[in-house]
Length: 233
Image 1 (cartoon, rainbow, N blue to C red):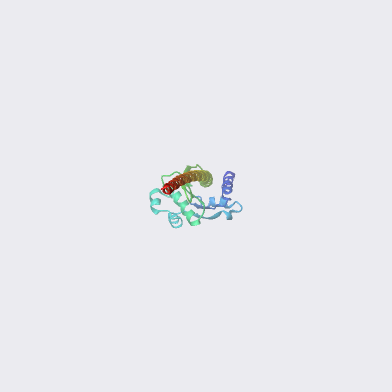
Image 2 (image 1 turned 90 degrees about the vertical axis):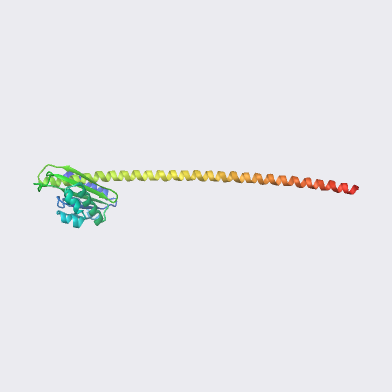
């Protein structure tokens, strides 16, 4: 494996060391991607397991690839690449999966796709995607090129997913802060209304008490006048 691919593998592994795990599903590369990753020391901490599913039957049995998809699209297709990655992800219970399915050469085995054509599938528990490229070379060069392309594709989509997750987290934090602010304002408004209502009730109670007090004094005065008149008679 060339130095650029090894460097790409190291870059991907640095992203996994935060506690993530990876699994691999390969066809035409025959385990070369798994070998490249496990050449890095400490692989047991982040590498679960991998599959080399060369035949249709192996893809169906081991990775739960839909037979109808294989018949309709062929093994070298975006749909199969995604299903291979998703099948490996589920079986290994990993955080991310990479699949490779392509035509390494020297012939294309009668298919309409050219030698050097490959699909790479990337899947996580929340998203999945496939990308294709064309590489020109002999069988070994194509296999190594496929692995390098898979590593770079995984890194790019991993970084995009992490950026999106961070953005979603920040948006969620802002939303919660806004909800808390609105609730606080509503609470202040309720308290102000309650205080105003209490003040109004106190004023009404005092007014009622004053009126009642005045009526009582008038009655007392009348009673006194009445008693005086009675005395004169």
